[in-house]
Image (cartoon, rainbow, N blue to C red; front, side, top):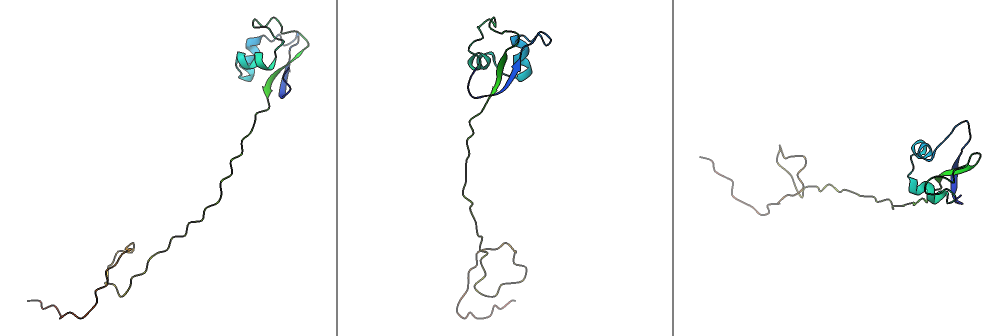
Length: 106
């Protein structure tokens, strides 16, 4: 049996497990079962009553650490007075400088 086995099943006369029963119950492949239990032959003739067989191994774990990121959003402020009704999400302005004659409406 493999050294990193974490769960086993015992084959007894009472449970009458076959290789296929073990594969189905523990949702493992025949390749995994043979790899973890090298004494079992390809035709399962090495599956003996009263012996335990590995059905799960310890999985290697990978830990991924991600650094925390802080994002600061600065809301721009207008460079001078704005007109009423300006959209609240406006983020660019053009400041008109200088003196202009008043607009004459006809």
